[in-house]
Image 1 (cartoon, rainbow, N blue to C red):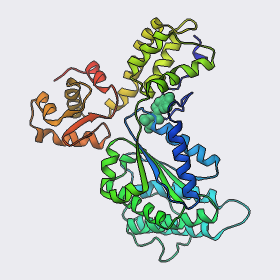
Image 2: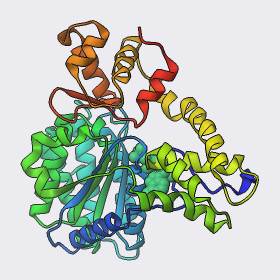
Image 3: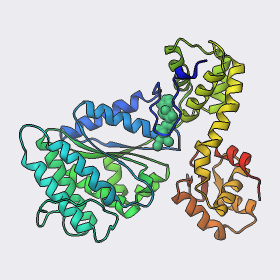
Image 4: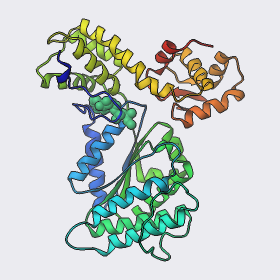
Length: 392
Ligand SMILES: Nc1ncnc2c1ncn2[C@@H]1O[C@H](COP(=O)(O)OP(=O)(O)O)[C@@H](O)[C@H]1O
Ligand SMILES: [Mg+2]
């Protein structure tokens, strides 16, 4: 069928034509943010799960809905190897500029800007990647100690006050939170906790890989009072069917029952894969309904597409030794696997391959669902590793 009319949207962060199975969560997030704006206690959300389950699109949806209700956003995606202050400073500046717009100038926004100027000036020494410079007079004694915990606490407090004055809330949307170094993550949580104790309308909605849960563990007593940790997983059968069939139906195209069953079996209900399978099955089909033969031919195309993109970009980030480790994991199946078993496949000692495992976790390629276990952060990655490389 005409690829120009193809409704599916495989791709990192691409909004799906039908955001299936997440209504409940979207509503919970909206309630929490509205309560926080009103100065009422509520726990914001931290979304965690594997690659391709739909964390980013959910985070974006929560943000867009909140913006439509007048809640201010700070958008941050944590890349590897950037400091949190360097990420926060320009994003907070943009938010404060937007917050400061409007007829009546308010004192709070100006003070928050000066706090940001102090923050940047004081932390530039330690976090050399801060690129922002503000030609503003910093406020002496405010957020200028040079200690991240203290300064971030004071900065977020002044931003919270500015938001309260504007009768709104400021929400930090932090994607890929697992890449924020642990000490900086702890400082952020401490600062958010302090703001919440003062009933200031500033909070964070975050998303990241499963290792996030362990990483926040150190600031845990705080984190658990502030955030609800929500696992984001593959879609259940009903939602997976909706994700696949609703976009086609809107374009007047149906699926044969067996075609749906075939695609659900192949994708295991993972959102990214549903988009890819839907896209390819549409393209190979001659006409509605998309039948099981189309679905099978679509599968071949979809896997080839994933191998060349979704899986491939992750594979290319690995060193040769890391590739061998991942290949050994794949040999054992989808996982999780015991570290000892992986080492056995490699014919090495657990202790000698431990640094590889740590590096893979730091890169976000693997995580540890339980002590001594290792699993892929990308669904179906075991099959890909077997297709692309031989066991060495
Ligand atoms: N609830 C959903 N229903 C249908 N498709 C979805 C859903 N959530 C995500 N997707 C699709 O899955 C893909 C991956 O989404 P993304 O948010 O980038 O995942 P993650 O951030 O967890 O890696 C995108 O193509 C997106 O359109
Ligand atoms: Mg994402």
